[in-house]
Image (cartoon, rainbow, N blue to C red; front, top):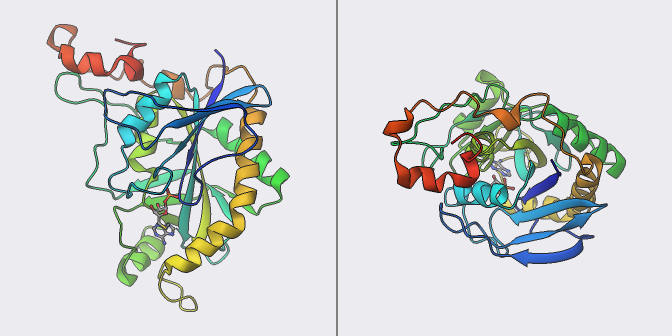
Length: 289
Ligand SMILES: CSC[C@H]1O[C@H](OP(=O)(O)O)[C@H](O)[C@@H]1O
Ligand SMILES: Nc1ncnc2[nH]cnc12
């Protein structure tokens, strides 16, 4: 299969540079309108699709990002891999603002979002025991080292609902009791939906602040976040471009099975399935339906 790398750009990353044959395309999805048009093109001979998660102009809040439409639209375009780029707060002294983290796991504390493509009329249960793809993580790590950024391999990302930042008590709970490393508002349900759509998914998060737990840094300040994002956006862009080029033109079967996640997932008997839902699942689950 031919590789097509999707890049979902988070806060501060609303476009990418260096694409050959760049074109913004509108993609229709039965799950609603995606966050924005999708920028398609090639990087080093590899097909790429870039989607700004909050839209150009940052219209969508973390709770209202159309996560299902975004993942469906990327799948519909033929994407094989998703690189998520995000801003995040840090729970660790040694993970400092300006550093990047390749996320290895998540705790999902979001509660006001649609989290599955499946439901009444077609029930499915996929595993997210290992929610990120190590093969993609390797490419991110190599690209980050080449870009000269400080990169941490592995870290648990607490996905909160937001849009307000955490209270001090929450920040301490996530850090001291739950052992989380970073915090953000968007990687869930995005990672779960990518797994349902059989897309390899990796998340690279740029640390912008110490959340509210750090005695020397006080509470989260959005202007500090914006200056950290601005100061590091060039590195983030060059890293992202390099990741795509490193993945190569051929997408081999995923050693972790991300691309076969639905093999045994669907529970609903064929005769009990809802044709209307099946029609909406054409891109996400057409392989097994
Ligand atoms: C701009 S600070 C809060 C905002 O930034 C992060 O977004 P993203 O993950 O898309 O980079 C965070 O999750 C919040 O949505
Ligand atoms: N401290 C924080 N909490 C949640 N999301 C964030 N995005 C950037 N910093 C964050």
